[in-house]
Length: 236
Image 1 (spheres, rainbow, N blue to C red):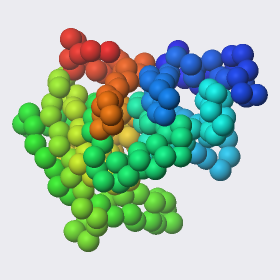
Image 2 (cartoon, rainbow, N blue to C red; image 1 turned 90 degrees about the horizontal axis):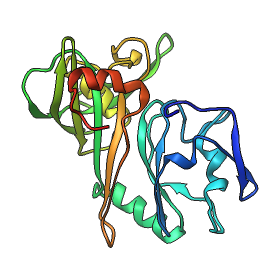
Image 3 (spheres, helix red, strand yellow; image 1 turned 180 degrees about the vertical axis):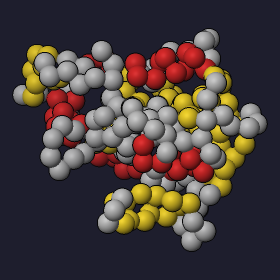
């Protein structure tokens, strides 16, 4: 089931046991690029415990090297994660992400009702840390520039379903910008969205390759009820 990390494993590949959730989450497999629908709750890397890094050898699929992530997603964010399968492609992907040439679309359900239908938020972000609360990001005039376009996709009492298009890639950018708008992402306890699972999906990725590549991830199970409540006709 999407959004869960079952403990059972599928048959072995490249000497590594594939978890049974992984094959169905391969959104695109090409000679040089893989796009994975990363489950919410799975870190890309971790010093201990479960992470995507553990399964990279199983995704070689005939290559001599493990595919490597070309960017990062927060552990609790579901959706499109791009992996480079060759060293030249990984370098190219890294350059595209660094140069802000990759089209990134996110869907989120916000805890609160936004005014208006679409706008752009420009609010610089910086990292802060305290002994009591640990580290977090905050809007501050001395922070790094951060810019996010948003538009409303649907509404329900107390909720807003939005599409985010980040034009910069700061840590926790969408989460902090949503909170700054007065409607934090549902399930984002760190920034005021309340308990539960984070309702944030890396919905689509557009890579300016030859030919261009655009891939979409489905709405994860834990977001479906809230998305349907806001917009019953919303695609999966």
